[in-house]
Image (cartoon, rainbow, N blue to C red):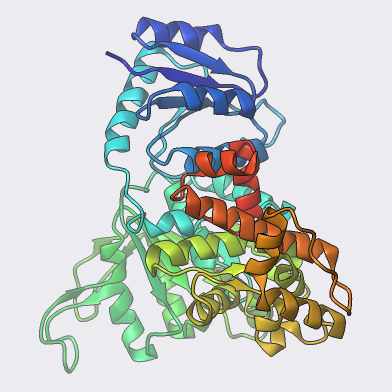
Length: 474
């Protein structure tokens, strides 16, 4: 018998065609026009419920739904039905994990039936905790206008064959963008092959890119295929393209123009069926003026440039990045760490010269120092809190850090806590208590968010939002 299906349509005014097709296929259909209605439907449905999600143009609502489904029932694999963009409007950005099936509205009966079958098969293969694919945690994270612009640009250029040049400071996530471009391209089922042009010795770069024949040079004991051959049919990512020597730039230009190459020491012409995505943290226009980078190659590569912002210019994304990096630590290294709201505030005032890579390194360092703990401002390395921590804040944080359990016990027992002689930061104090109580409820409920919400007198959606706010997980 077909599974029950919940159709979530935030804007209401449902699509009767979808419901009719689902019912014809034997499904019992429940409609939900709000997150609260969806929560109630999921509460009543069996655990193996197949959820159908009707997407809309408002990306933030989609992210909220994705987080809700992930928090409430990781076993559920949604099917996402989306409306195409109206002419003149920006394209719809669907920020969902790769394994979620997508179908454009209005769907035919055959399309919907095939997508439902795909969702069933994928649901059975969904990884368990600790083995979730790392690519899900390395996607573009953030709600800032800059990140939304980049998502739109990726979706625009992805399906084309245009060369892409990704520009940005070190640590801003250029390879992440390159992998997303490959994912949205028609080549997504073929290899994605990265090459760091700055990490390969100059005299070996040609062999690394094009391969070599046996005996082509001293030490070439066997023939070897290069990265162009490895990426056949797929995408070749040339990272740090600004470090490529001029003599190699000439040979790369020839490949881009003629779409053929020869191995070192060989004379057989090989077709170069690859898409080129290049990246650099250097100013290529200045290098062209200085004669350090070929102008013709620059214009070949810069068909579609994407400029990545440094973290300091999208600092509003820092809490989301912290939560995402913490989740990655949880799944890849079985460790995690949580930052207090004041610690997040202090980190938001830092300039982040190393960008997201520096933030990732800091999170791993803190996870080693304070495994599964709550990091206060005083626990941050000095350079991150220089000039940000006042004397009164330090005394309050030390007081809270020393006896967190006593505060929770006092409040839970109905006894009002005493204000310390130096006073306290009420907002920070309440946040500390809220975090402690949420953790206690999660521990009492064995990590089941629904049960923890009942212990705290909250709706599941409210608790899930608070968990995201404080970087907590089950």
